[in-house]
Amino acid sequence: MKKEKWRISSISFLWNLFFTSLKTRIMLYYQQVIFMEKRNLFIKGLKDAIPVGIGYLAVSFSLGIAAKNAGLTGVEALIMSFTNNTSAGEFAALGIIASGGSYLEMAMSQLIINLRYLLMSASLSQKIERGTGLLPRLIMGYEVTDEVFALSMGVKGRLSPYYTYGLMCTAIPGWSLGTYLGVVVGNILSPRLLISLSIALYAMFIAIIIPPTREHHFLGKIILLSMFSSLVFHFLPLIKELDGGMRMIILTIGISFLAAKLGPVKEINDE
Image (tube, helix red, strand yellow):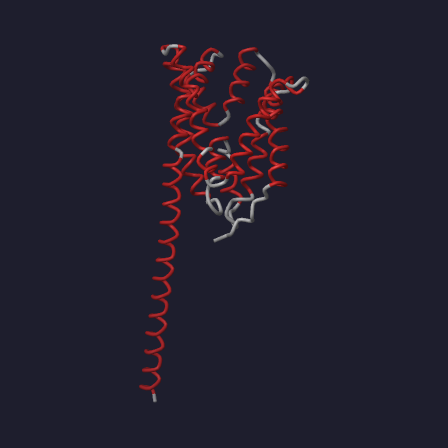
């Protein structure tokens, strides 16, 4: 009787050990698959943002020169660009610093100029993978720029935070390093070369937004409408007196509303 009980206990123990080992192997394999998927998305983000990083490196040279003229050192300019990823906002801030403006003036100018990022973030929040926590969302919100936003919205399906992390790891160093180099060696470069470097950002942005129009012709029409409307706003009485950031917000809300009515996008599948 004791031998029978011992045999049953041994079989039960071995059976449980087998299933525990199998369960552990399955979990490890699943974790490895998830890790590889996140790794691939991160690497894809790194590669996709290479044109953005190069464009940022070129354009931020002029920002670095402006920072030097405002009295900032290379390290101070580097920290400024690393913590404030906004070209228009940083140029405005440097103007206020150079003129000895107040902190209130600085805060109000940054709020108005960067309000468009609020709209971009609201749009991105609808595309992010379901179940994404608060911390990843905050990290993603740190680098909501025009170019990163365009790349993120171009992703098919839901947006993974790891893809955005990859974009950030290429774009942010380009912008920060370019600003630093602008302070250190920017004055050595000729004005013509600086102007040509500034054009690089516009060329890069066109390269981002044009390819999706080949598949979505309606998107191309919206882009043309946005360009034409921006030109009209630049010359309209009263409207042209508004801050550039405010004009962009008005255009963004108006054209987004029109696009949503005329060509609503189907809900993104979670697959």
